[in-house]
Amino acid sequence: MIGGLIGLLLILLIITRLTLGSGRDYPDLSTEPLYPASALEIVATMDKPLGNPAVSAGGRIFFNLHPLAEPEGATVFEWVDGKAVPYPDATYQENFFNVLGMFIDNQDRLWTLDNASLESTGTRLLAFDLDSSQVVHDHLFSNDFAFLNDLQVSPSGEKIFFSDPGLLFLKSPAIVVYDIASGETRRLLEGHESVKAQSWAVHGPAGDMWLLRGLIRFRLGIDGIALSKDGDWLYFGGVTQDTLYRVPTEALLDPDLPAEALAGRVEAVGPKPLSDGFSIDLENNVFITDVEHSGLARMAPDGALQTLVRDERVRWADGISFGPDGAIYFTDSALNVIFGLLPTADLAKVEANAPYHLFRFQSGVEGVPGG
Image 1 (cartoon, rainbow, N blue to C red):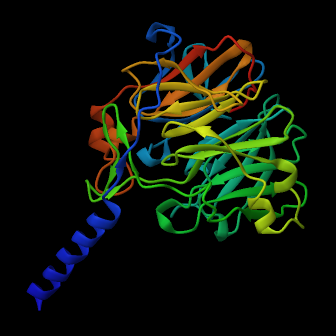
Image 2: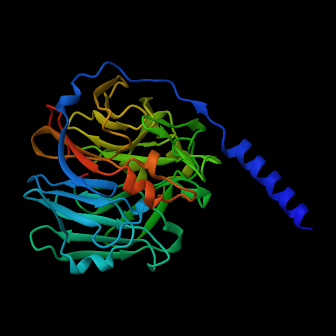
Image 3: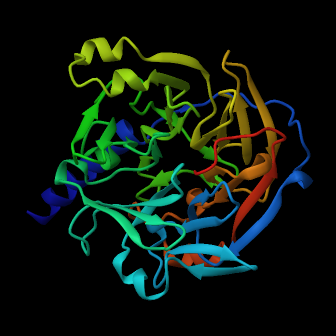
């Protein structure tokens, strides 16, 4: 009996490895960087991996610790005078569990996206007024929205767009739209080719990206999203997806538009690197973190791709945010070197690979601040 169970387990492991452990090598789309590695400035340093930054138009810098690294204590910070200060304060940190997505909107509100966990009651969206640090919006999503990743807020501050990568195959990837006033939430483009993961093997500069100690290749659908300054276009792409796409927001916001018609409004911009976070400038050039080549790339509206900067200090370029005066901020979470047996970090690896940095790069162009 025991021998039969062991044999069955081995067969299941082999099948899993063959079906989910394979992956094609992704072509190197990087170019000669426009700027030297010395153009990267270290803004903040922490002993735990960083998740996403959010920088206000006034230059205030916020970030969180990556929830996959299971940080203890404070997890959401403002960088003030060279120090990480818990935001909104140390006492409030007990209300955060798995904050990953962050964004600062035109109304100077910091939005935090706290995903469902065993400790929490569900995925929670909070907004803090930056002048008062008081909560001005609090919404708990249903279980249909258990994991949301990045977010963008419309210029009017009335709608929020989320990427839902379909983590761990629990759901099909989708774009999620939330109406702040009514509380209505809709899943769109669910399972469409533009939001689905592809079977690329992610070769990070400091190690390949695996789950379950090499049994399963890391694959993730729609992740990075960026909203044009006028709010007319949402740009998006998956980590293991070869194309940057865009869709008009008026189509996403039309509740009467059939799914097939919405799919027909999706446009391919151009081939992109395997990526994580996005940001955007005023001319709709999309800035993309290149997770395989330690840096940042920029895609023009015509699809032309240019590497901006690369640096071997960057192990996994993660979240990204424009700040004022053309400054781009991005985090190095080192996800490809800290994962353990489960799809969470190995705490010994987290300690061994510290420190972790928030970088800044002067792009020379004006972008859309916020994250």
